[in-house]
Image (tube, rainbow, N blue to C red; front, side, top):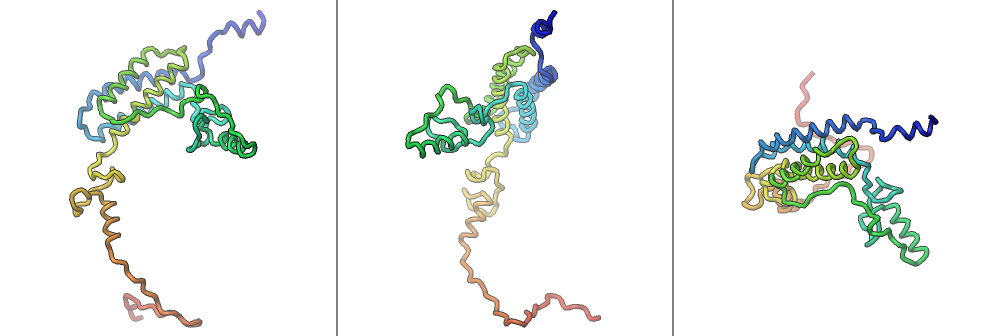
Amino acid sequence: MSPQEQHSSRGYSVPTGRPYALKELQANVGALGDRVKELYDGAHPAEYEPVADALYLAFRTAAGLAPAKSYTGCPEHPNGALDPEAPEGWGRCLICNDRRRLGRRLQGTRAAGPATGEQRRLGYPVPEPPYDLDVLRHYLRVVDEQRFHLTLGSADDDFVRIADDLHRAFIVARELSRPRNASGCSEHPGAPIDPDAPPGEACIFCAGRKRRAQRPAQTPEMLPRIRRGERRQLQRRFERPPG
């Protein structure tokens, strides 16, 4: 048998590390169900912290099993900088968009952007609020159903799908694990409460900023000018002991 025939008869080759990673993913996702069953409506944010940590580990494992995702959608610069002001119909790669802008200025014509179907998703999906326990349980049920069908020969799309759903569940658990907005401040939701502040202004940061703004402006005191060659005599706060 020739070497080419031997190579073709080997068939599918399992990537290195995939059996261990898949076993770890199955174990982590299976243990999440028991942790979520202990949660209840109105649970303290600290009770969501171990769930968020476990979901993040499971997400990283699933992301390692899935093919690398392009954050920019650019095949040349998949992990490059994102363009915050990308025109309509253009990609999100800042490097390529700068090239198009330069060519547009030089040629005086608008450079054609990539087709809409060629633009890939940026990163991993983030669910829309509100975030509550029912939404978290929904995503965990979806993930639990998907993990039963995962095998070493599963398609890449299956690993991409479970990684996306794990990321959604992690975002929900992370938001639930954050402290409640007791101060009622939209700018500093986790700020401590100022006990001396009036009602509706309990944020200690905003209350301190308001007090500083209400203080009268003080005229700076100028020190007398010292002539050249003289030394300033500093008044000691404590007298030096004799001897």
